[in-house]
Amino acid sequence: MCGRFIIMTPGRILAEHFQLAEEPLVEPRYNIAPSQPVAAVRLRPDSTTREMCMLTWGLIPFWAKDAGMGYKTINARSETVEKSPAYRAAFKHRRCLIPADGFYEWKRLKSGKQPYLIRKGDETLFALAGLWEHWKGPDDQEIESCTIITTRANDLLAGLHERMPVIIDPGGYDLWLDTSVTETDLLKPLLRPHPSENIIYYPVSSGVNRPANDDPQCIEQVDPYQEVDQEQGELF
Image: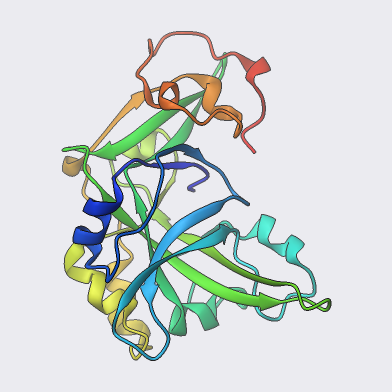
């Protein structure tokens, strides 16, 4: 799964990497959690121009009766995303890229759950496969929300967790964002595990268990054999 991630890349580099029309105003985030705003790249309506917007993490389908459904839809499975009632419309028409510099995963130990930060081998920016949706509630409340697509873990990460978020290679950005492409056979090949040889990971403090902790200490490497402090809080 993907339940936490980080983004530290400055707006200037984000604009260059994603070919944005404008440089986004972003601040470093070291512990992004579900239900919080996340930066996402998508195409502007009726345009081929890319924009960066802020979406609530936890997709609320357009047909949902209330916004609470978003707490259950932070991740969509790549194997069933095109068939799931919650995601199939967004998969066809509302795909996005979610910039990240790393994501967290927790390994179960006898002492508790040890968090690890997972990054590309060169510790550079990458893009997670996302879907977005526009929801309007009965009281005219409007929310734009998103989910992150996951796939089976690669061989390196399988010892931490059976799932990992889908990382879209830059060569696939145009196809993934193209709203005119709706064919599953064209899109599904993008939803594969990222190669193990381009991934690194290391243990970090259990302080990331608390969403309120959002500072550079979250990404600092710690002794992998230390006890996990269970009083730091729950994962969500």
